[in-house]
Image (cartoon, rainbow, N blue to C red; front, side):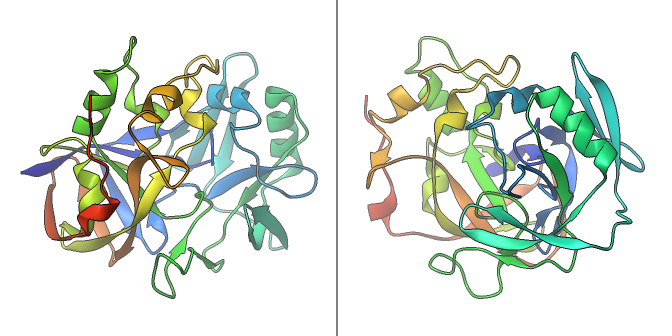
Length: 276
């Protein structure tokens, strides 16, 4: 039996994640997940890939909004309700979509904390950013995530990777939304249609991993692992793969402890068999 063991949201793209016991599945992913994003002076998205110090900004959910904390710069509150009606176009990868800038005061705080000029933008409910239509049906949308509303990883997959490493790594290196226990390593690769709490999720594509996985989320220090080791046995079509991106149909609440029912699987050709 496959069971959800951990759930995570990342309210501000590329900042610290939050472990939750349950979460609402909305039209574009888990509630609050990547609804905010930092952009540069050209309104282009910022991530830890270029600015690993973003990992040092920790986020909490409070009753009226987010609380972001930096070990040297204190904290700042971000209200859930945005009062700025003016939208501007922001860029994330190859997509351009409307966003609302939160405030000059927030921009100043984040710029000071990160040491780079940046602005905080929010995705309003009427912004509809579609996922890559090559891997998902028309109308599937996401927030400011890289590409898809969900990422699922099995604990057995991380355990398998850690058995090959000199120093084991925590799951936060891979920034999943859903972690499950049960089954074997990389069982998530094959998930085509799964059901959780009467919500349908569909495997869109395996997740190609980048340098962000090498950044320690507590210190912002980069290293060679896990990409060096993953490349030795999780390399396919010039990409290093770990975890699977999901799209979904339906809304509701998913909870740690929920059972994952696998209704259909992908062709095994997309599955990489672990070898030691």
